[in-house]
Length: 275
Image 1 (cartoon, rainbow, N blue to C red):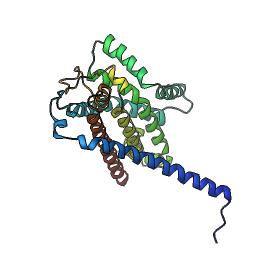
Image 2: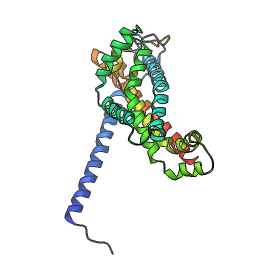
Image 3: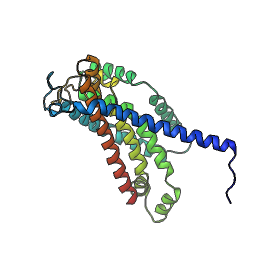
Image 4: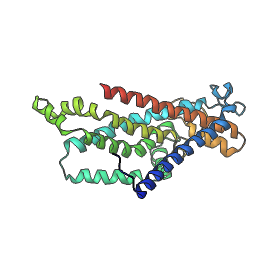
């Protein structure tokens, strides 16, 4: 027999449904607004290999975005994952170094991106002499997403039951084999979720990249060449005021890129879970 719900329970249930519906509604409104304003301006000229003021091509920015994401993850993922493995699996409880690293990571997570951009400009661009380049932008973004990858990986490792480790140890496996053969595969979906969040931050970043990677609307010829990502490309077009429609079209493509990355990552996480 069902119990009658109290008025407070009904109110909280209504409030929860209202907040959820409002969130979904805002998301659908934003997607619909961007699609209505941008889809009519998606033309073959937007995907020309070379950018000109006539075609306002976004293809160079798309290629630069992929290169920036790949290079940033190549730098930050190994550092973040292995640091988290040390803190979660090897360091003793109450280790002062681990506490210091955690506090530092949490502090870095709250720093505005423009501060990272100014640091990257002073250190990588000027002091190291890399200039406005893809490499300077990727290293700056790597520092920015490193705390996120570290924290999500560490929390994912902590969620793996201790019985997994104890079972591996009882069968004669060493700590290194246990971590890489038992613990990491079990924590892979959570680690992948952190990497997805990092990719989302890289793709949508503008302030840090404007001061480090530059805004050149061409495909970088090498790591020391300047380039612009899709987010910077969209910002540049909208700030000029001459290509507003193309800016919305770029936003549509950027939205599809983010959705595609999330879908692919979710599929990979599902496969890892099944294995």
